[in-house]
Image (cartoon, rainbow, N blue to C red; front, side):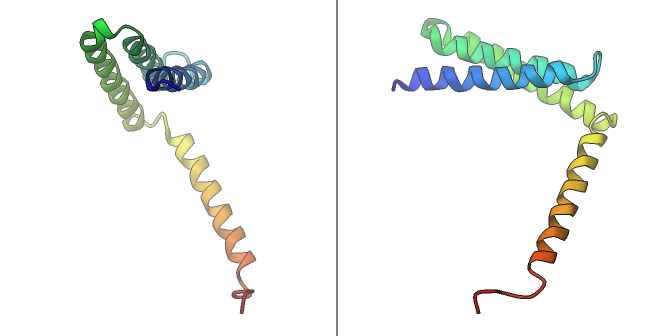
Length: 111
């Protein structure tokens, strides 16, 4: 398969995933803006792979949108908008650690 087509498919897939996160985010939140900008960046990057003549300007625009998305996500983190996500991940990791410890409490079964 042509590498350009693969890049287009990957960029559009990422745009779809980011758009899904955008729709699930709270209206007006920094996180929502970050996901919208990220999805737009992926669409611009996919478009730059389609139109090789406009590669440089589109890649600059896509890179700028990506940086803006990262900045908005950082702002959301600093303002505490992502605290619920981190807490959920923390609880999940602790439950997995307890499950792993209980499963391996008796030592190695391969001995």
